[in-house]
Image (cartoon, rainbow, N blue to C red; front, side, top):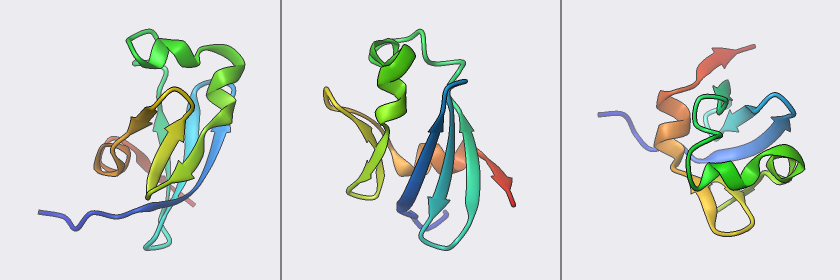
Length: 80
């Protein structure tokens, strides 16, 4: 089982992609386009998505919306 890594930086893109940096220095891209129409993420459509920020080691938005850091890691692809 992999050790849990905290997200330390996030950069949201308007096409529902998140560029993530984890505490181990890895940069990964997470695609939210397949879940953006499902609750609670459907509340992030449009400009609300761009307010993504890091708190407590993961990506959060207002309205108590977040994604677990292990999900972000496991379902993202590594980028340079």
